[in-house]
Image 1 (spheres, rainbow, N blue to C red):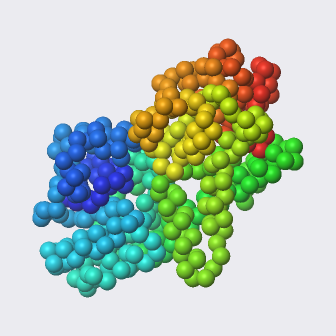
Image 2 (cartoon, rainbow, N blue to C red; image 1 turned 45 degrees about the horizontal axis):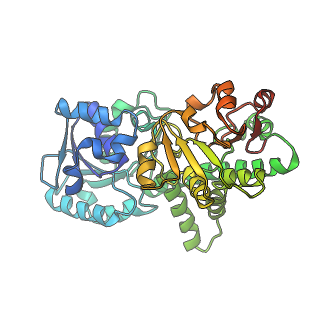
Image 3 (cartoon, helix red, strand yellow; image 1 turned 60 degrees about the vertical axis):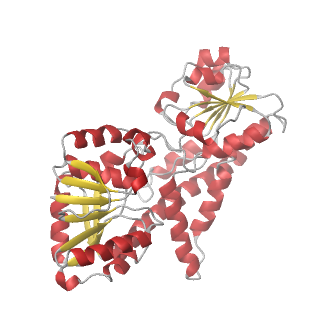
Length: 421
């Protein structure tokens, strides 16, 4: 099929790469400024594992091209705009309504909110098979290509049989390992997307709340987690306490869903979750502050992990930013390591002399008065403890993701502080 993808962020590029890899001829349309950028300079491609290579491969074989706003023969139009580009989507729809008077299929993968697809549909003539179908954007940064091409569930939001058949035909290559293919109205699909995001945020917020209480009551949150996860009504997913969650899309979707409750005069747990998560991001600094009795004069602090989660170079709303800001405000020398996100962090902290960006995790801990583990990258889980003891000035580890064994570290001679442990 011939597919045109509209958008400039991660969602658009992943859709374009995956659809091209499946054999479609794909055009990706974005702003003129993006079209002039070298692929290597587009952060959405650079930060996502494997995406830049896949884009380059599909362009080399001719199945994927970059284009401006130009007319071309297209079977399906795929909207992957950012959440604040709804007017741009309306403009695209109006242009297509005139250019393709019948059998026009538009797939909306944008996070515009509940009822947005209906508003876009109102511009078109459904009797002439001019139809907008909603497919939720369920991509996870760090696993975006895999999530698109090997999804466990896909929701199609439409009541139009022709559009559903065409959509299923397009996504058929990605249905091999599907566990749930759900059909519902576009409004129900949009609501479901936000409801799932909200539930995940509430689970994270609740386990963090329990962990903070466990700290005060001398119980180990890992034991509590195990007990909770063993209950089949609860399970263990999204029950890992830590120093807060980040990510642009996750935070935006939670905030948007909370706004929907507020506009209808309802209180929402999500508003509290958002507020408490920002407080949780300060947790490691507070633990450090308390340990050194509110005096961080002349201290050097190592930070392992800057990205908002493992597997991505993105630092959008990352807990590391709040922690580093607090450390800098106290005049601390900060030494940071991250396997992927250092370049983004350097751009964020331009000309900040108190931060040292380390290409090796052990360079970061040299002469450090504490090690703060912020992102649970796999390479941090089993470090050389003897080397840490030798290189650190003070053997203090504040583990923001509970990746270490407390008893083992204490046997080595470390002072260990976890979350809820």
